[in-house]
Length: 153
Length: 272
Image (cartoon, rainbow over all chains, first blue to last red; front, side, top):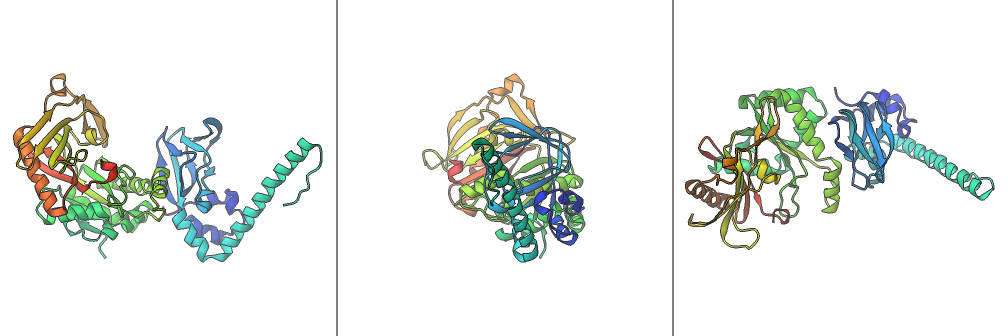
């Protein structure tokens, strides 16, 4: 089969504003990738150029050597690397044999550059995600300072 | 454009990668390279993407090789003078047959897009889309194998430096054993024979992949090359330098009494 089922992409917040046709365009860029149990899938601090959705199996997430969560079917990771060319923010290790679908920066970028509608929707979604994150930060800061959040952002 | 060609017809680095083109040139110049095919980066990517037409095409073309197979990456820019991708991209030994080749090609394609490969690319200023060609060859079952520098990579002396061990050369390349160490001058005179400590031999297994097999104690420190074989390696070094130029890093294997060239690349900083 070529690509990833679009149902798997609907769960990814970054893609949640895209319609079926737009999701199909992204879905066909994905390729199957298998990892063996115990294999390091991504390494905190290393470069990365691929985003993955888990189809089957489990993986553990570590930040600074500390276990943070367990990922399973439908979960995803590495979406930031699709856009910013930055380093990985966590280490992910396959705790069972793992079947993923992955898309690389080099496939994703031309699609977004060519399709302004998809690009704009992704930008809007990222702005919303940033607003949500800042909102949480403001609230926690306000709670610490004993005053209300401004809610600006 | 044909995307799967016999190795001897691989001529374009930008399509098949430097390893495939180098081996193709070696065959055309009469060097003893095991038979095989070169796969273009484009068809490797199509197979990794699950495209049925590409999968069928590859299976049909490489079928005459039978099995088992050695499947090696041949990325564009790989093994060049400016950047050595040695160790970044996969080689899969003992792929049982063309039926299992798809999974091997997918793994190799992803190895060029792995975090470690991307980190390496960024470090050497090559953050560009990787294109990975592949060499598919009949897998040898060598008695002895290893590496050879056609000029001493440490001292720069005009002499061959040979490292050898029992079984597949991966035992030497991956540093699993302390290999035998030999120095031979250009006339074929042996300057040094230093036995290693070769406790394991890497061997292929029928179900695919390789295992590390214990070497019988009497062979652990026994030299695995005699003077005739060293002379033959010296002649191979001569031919490699005639074909490719000076200072080469050669992978070789001796199987059923015959010497084979597996890879020949420029000595890069990583190889020193």
